[in-house]
Image (cartoon, rainbow, N blue to C red; front, side, top):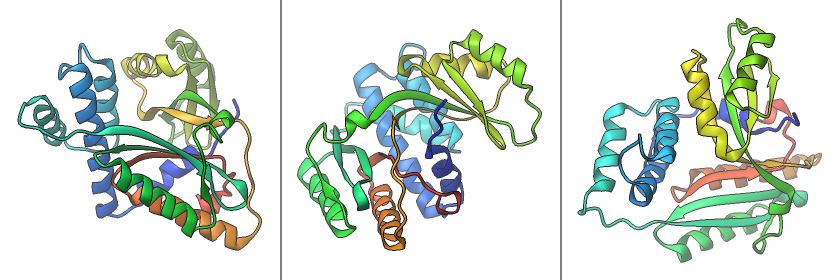
Length: 247
């Protein structure tokens, strides 16, 4: 498996403030609302909703909040209409960046995204300018903080679950799946008793860019911080090969 830096980002996010965690709750809630409107409010019939509920729980969103969002999205009184938008561009020194958004105002979101790129040493590009450098993959992270997982047993269960690959890290195991199999693999492994930290379809880069200039590093961190703090932006993927201390 070719490792990538997203898991470092997840670990970094764990230390964020309550206000930043509230933003995560808001973004997941928006995803759930769109999912319910597209596929219905019954998780047993809406696989994507099951995955989002699992994602919400992995991010410690209270069950009451999850149920409230689902009921609101299923009700006729909810007039919110969000569109999925994807932006591609370059950060400092040509770092490839993909931004996924759910917005009720495309012009506002596009303007804000362009502003962030311009302000922090990058530029927003056209559709397809960097996406060819990424491949969609299901990435599942298993908790192994106490080091109790047996590699042979994990390999056996991963193969039975339908995972394509796995890698033991310091305190976790990272699995790779076909994007369409991510939810099913997660459910299978949960049934086997594994603790799932994260299970999402991600854009995984095929090549990476190293930033040597401290100013490039500073601006890239600022670009990522501003993008992630924007309520309209759901996911940010990049091919910056971050040193651990920068993650």
